[in-house]
Structures are given as C-alpha cells and as structure tokens.
Length: 104
Length: 391
Image 1 (spheres, rainbow over the protein chains, first blue to last red):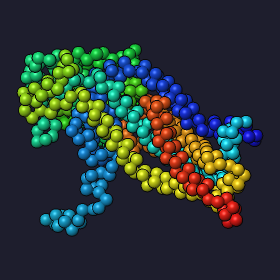
Image 2 (cartoon, chains in turn green, red):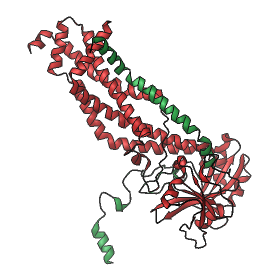
Image 3 (cartoon, chains in turn brown, green):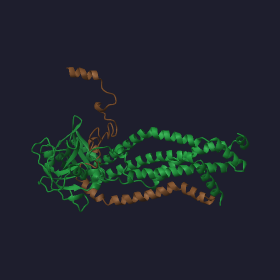
Image 4 (cartoon, rainbow over the protein chains, first blue to last red):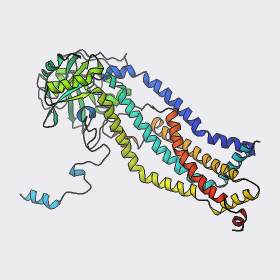
C-alpha cells in the first residue's frame, strides 16, 4: 500500500464515526417517517385505552398500567429484578419456622 | 504528500504492525460502546413509543384508594367534578384484568366508552374485521392474543370470570400487529360486557377520565377534585411522561449496572493496553527522535494511532448497537429492558436517535481514550534516544 493510500485509509477511519452517525441518523429518520404514518392510528386507538402504558409485563408482578397503578413510585422494586416474594428470594426463609407452623 | 498525510500514513502503518494489540483494544472498546449504545437507543425508543399515545389520554384520571390500594369508585362521583369551571367532560371508565389459565397470564379487558371515536381497517387501527356493535356481545383483541388463542373473526370465546352470567364474546376484529406495543394483551368490548366480565356492579367504574378545557388549569382542577372526593388519587397527564421517563431510565440503569463488571473489565484492559508503552514502541520512538522527529511529531503520530483505533472501534460499536436493537430486534437485550410475558409485543421499535446523540457518544468515548494513550507516549518521547536504543 502506498503512503498516499495509507493516509487516505487513515482519514477514512478517523472520520468513520461521523460518517456512520450520518448514515444511522438517516436510517433512523426514515424509520421515524414510516412510523409517523401510524400516528393517527395510535391516537385513535389510545382514546380507547385506559393509559398510554406499553403492553410490557414482568414475571414478578403485574404492572400493565404502571402510570395509573403506581404513579408516585413507578417501580417500587423494579422490573427485571429478582422476584421480591420469599418464593423467589436468594436466601430462603428459616425452614424451622415453617416446620413449626406446619406442626401446629 | 503533505506533512500531516505522511504522519497519518505512518500512524496507520504502526497500527497495522501492532495488529493484535490494535484488534484487542478496538474489539473491547467496540463491544463496550455497542452495549452502552444499544441500551440507550432502546430506552429512548421505549419512552418515545409511550409518548406517541400520551396526547390522546385524558388530562386527569381520578381513582379511589381504599386502604392505600386502588378500588372501584361510584360513577356518581363524576357529578362532583362536572361543575368545576375548567372541566369539559367526565367519563367513567370500566377496565381491569382477567387471568387466563390457558395463557398463565393476565389480559386487559377494556370497556368501549360511548362516544369513543370509531376504529376500522381503513384508519390503520384494525388488521381485519370491524368495530364493535353496542349490545351485540362482541370483542376486538390484540393480534398477539388472537394468535395465541387461535382466534379468527367470527369465533366466540367465553373468558373466565367470577360472574357466571358474563356473556361469551364474538371476535369481530383484531388490532394491527404494528400496534402490538399497546394492544398485545388487550380485549376491547362493550362497556356492559366489560362490567359483566370484571364482575363490576352497575354504577361503579374503575376510574374517571376528566378532560379540561384549558390545560394550564389542570393543576388547579386536580387539586379541586382531591378536595371534593376525599381519598381520591388524581393523576395528571403531565405526570405520565415523568413516570415513563423514570421507569425506562431505571430499567436502563439496571441493565447497565448488571453489565458493569464486563464493561469495567474491558475498560481496564483498554487502559492497560493504551497506557503502556512497550519496549518495541519505546525503541521506535527513540529511533524517530534520533532521525530528527520533534516531540510534537511523535505525539501527533501517537495521537493519530489512538484516534484511528478508537474511532474505528467507536464506529463499529455504534453500528453493532444500532443493528442489534433496530435491525435484529435486540435479541437478549429486549427481555431485560421490556420485561417478558407469554404475550410479548413483537412490533419493531422506532429509533429516536439523531446525529448529535451519536456524535456525543463518539466524543465521550474518544476523548478520554486519546488522552490516556498520549500521556505515556509523551513520557517516552522525553527519554534520551541513545539510552533507549542501548536498552
């Protein structure tokens, strides 16, 4: 590779984040434009739904409409966290207490 | 060829000569950037998705708390609100959850309020079928739920309910799959059918939707409602954006915190590689100085070497992060950020990222990276070339 070609490659690599940012931003812009075509449908639908919360749910608890059900504390424990209930705890509850309860 | 071109050509040559080191350094950096960028891209996309539907929500939602837990309220409570000066309308809403044993999960049953705008295939809300006919015991369900239950328009389904008189509902339409983010678990039916399914007595409602004529007065209206209905929880629409911002921000924080050990290991590796000048490199610097290169030239070449590796790795990381989330659908990352369920919305996310955010991430990575690698090179260039070459 000649020094000129090496210098050209070096410049291309140095400017690659800016070039890539432009390309990705253009792709994002196209996807946003496509998505905007559905804005009217979303608005029409949203008028029938109880909230604008997304249909996402965790395994540990049901927080479908989190904005309405826990407005002050969006997540008391948190999605994608271990189940806070004893059944899912990392440390088991004292078994002897359970046994005593069973015996009663 | 100009001086700067020559220096750049030399820097690239040095990067290629130390190929394995460059690949280790660049690969680690690219992976760290990809993970960070993917989490940020996805969090922003989720917030934007929720934001799309916010404008159509009521200005104020009123709920009732009993013992600190949400409870149904009397529809007549609407009368206590209607005469507040800025209130345009109050609508009691009926909605709630039904557990489907076959699904091992909850679905959201929503009563279609009288006067709600009609929906159809033409307006892009429905994939097939038509809107509900009041009193005909019909339902419209999300595409994902219909697929899971194997339902087609015309099928009749009896949903489990504590009320034995709850009617079976005929499927008359399904929501478009692109609206899955909002409808994956939703069943919309007549208000009376929803009431029967949820076993909610007549005259009660899940909450009240209040529309306000002047949005600037929402805060005052909310305070007045709180005074008129003791024990009410009053939720303003403006709060919703904050809730989603916090919720998804926290999810992103959790994912990044879980990835911190891996990110730290990569950064320590990168720092070790970038800050250490080995004997070969020290000798190379000494030879360059002996040949008449100034300290500024040596530093410029070393800076260019770091920037070439760092810039290429950052670009690769951004590309991987973007492709992971928006082209491949974020396998592995999506469950951690959006949760998991039997009914899982599969609609693709829309990127909100722009040039400024992408360049911001690049600069935040490249700045410290370049500084880290120039300092040891400067120290090496201060040494006497003859001493270094003699070993």
